[in-house]
Length: 217
Image 1 (cartoon, rainbow, N blue to C red):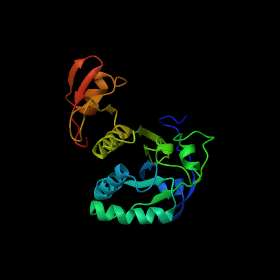
Image 2: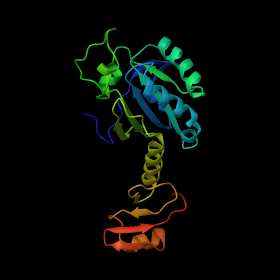
Image 3: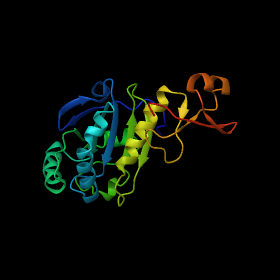
Image 4: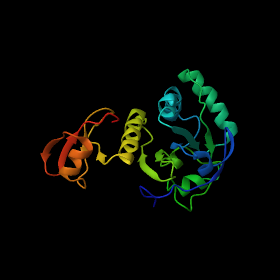
């Protein structure tokens, strides 16, 4: 099973932007890899369109988007036309064709012995509804899996991206329901003396719970 902070499995893939080596494609960027059980499914149609409409929010955070579905590039390109028609926005990020299910299996979205054939439906691939946040070191920093009937909350994914990017460079954590520019928690490993030197004034609720405000939070 994949775990947080493990290296994301690398793969070669055919996409709507051509062939890629995933780790090479990541480069020095953060990445959101989000998967779909099948093309031309209603919930995923709304998701792909919404992601396209907010892609700039990820771009300005140095984060690339890439989708995955178990259908072909040809089907992906036809689906993109439907998405543009329904959602009024073009999908400009790549979509991976995972027809042999190898990538879905390597990311633990399907059992290793699952068979790929033309009779598969979205229900067969119900667990292929995952989101992975991957950092420039190719490490998995967040994993989420949604049920078939629940559209993903991409504002939450942006929130997690903001939190992980911030906490990767500062000795802080983010509290429940945190949003960018709100108060953060000083991690327990930092002493009060170091906290004073690093952050200046801070609010001490308990010895282990201290809040501060950062200019870049």
